[in-house]
Image (cartoon, rainbow, N blue to C red; front, side, top):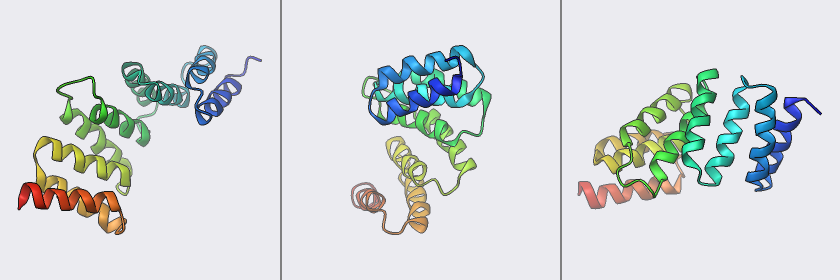
Amino acid sequence: MSDYKYYLDNGIYDIQDGKFKDAIEKIDKSIELKNDFEISYFYRAVANQALKNFDEAMLDYTKALKINPKMTDAYYNMAEIILTRKDIIHPNLPKAVEYLEKALELDPKFIDALFAMAAAYKKLGDYHKALEYLEKLLQIEPQAVNARALKKLILNKYIL
């Protein structure tokens, strides 16, 4: 079959099943058939991110965003890679903040992006800015346990 959607859909099913290498092979075929569809690059990035192939994931998220600059999840996932990579001693936190700002510009109530922004500002040592984002998050989701815990930690350990 030569339909790019067929390969993409099967690649997405493989991602859902945790078969990330198989997913990449199928999505590669989809991209060979249609190389201007942002969803293919996005899902190949997701599979690479799951396999900790972070550089490949970043390239694919970037390609997806060049095709469609309104992919909120691509900005968020790029920031998450920067914030969570263990193999980079000095991650580019300002770049992560930039990606999260873009995600929040597109979706101001994106809970995970608000939490990630708070975590990024905590890592940058800007505890008041971190608290601002936690407050925004808690206004939307008052019972957010992780946000409450991070807020308590910042207030007790860093702001006193």
